[in-house]
Structure formats: structure tokens, C-alpha cells
Image (tube, rainbow, N blue to C red; front, side, top):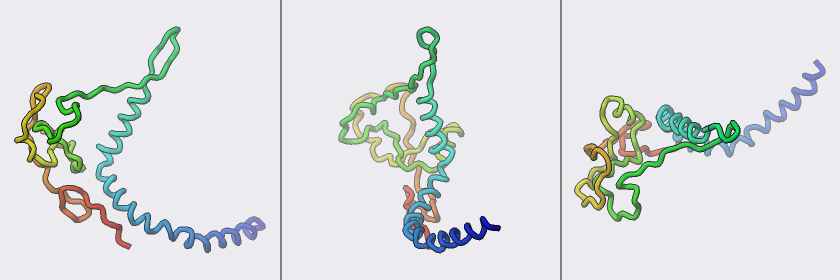
Length: 161
């Protein structure tokens, strides 16, 4: 009982001060909510995949001299005809998409390939020949819906008050 008599008045003062302390957080949360909603769409491919890949690269162990366990970084270098920098125009082999739909990786599961943001560059001159088994067809991903707005890329709007 004595602890309650001492603690409750202190808690009351904290709770009375909380609204003024949290007032600046409200505008920031209105900006953060749409970002978190978008991130939630990508939770399987972008967030978890990135975290597991980074963990796998940085968590390598190997047995060194005298049986000592030492850490090492793992990874693989990706080389293609687009690894060379300095092109003025996109190469006709480019299939990049800065704004893939959340389920874009499902296309690969279904035996397809990743769709492109744009295919207008496929008529450009190939300055460097493609490496490997060739180039997949260029198929435009098209617009997709996020928070009720259909567009080629997500447009983050302030969360409603």
C-alpha cells in the first residue's frame, strides 16, 4: 500500500506529461506508416532474403592453421556484360526493375523470369555481347496497386489522421 501511495502520484505526473512529449512523434508516424505498409508487402523477399543473405555472407567460419576456427566472409561476384560501367544508354540486354511488385519472385517459381520496368531500350545497339545462355525476353511488369493507387511504382502518401 505504501509503495502505491508513493508510485501512483509519480505515474500520474508522467502520464500528464506524455501527450506533450509524444506530440512531435505524430507527424513522423504519419510518414512512417505508409513505408512500413510497403515494407510489409515485401517481407518474404526483400526483408527476410536480405537479412539471411547478409548473415550468410558475414557468418562464415573455417578451420585455419593448428585447427583454429577463424571467421571469413563469403560471397560470389556477379559478372555480366553490364558489369562494365560508363554506358550512355541502357544495353538491350538490361532487364532491370527498380520497383518490382511484392510477388515478383513468384514469377520465377512459376517457371518464368523477372519482369522489367521498361523495354524501350531493347532496340539499342549491343556494345558488349551477352555472357552465358542468352537474354530472356523483355516483358514489362506494368502498373500495380498499393494503398488503393495503381501505378508503375508505389507512391507513398501521408497516413490519414
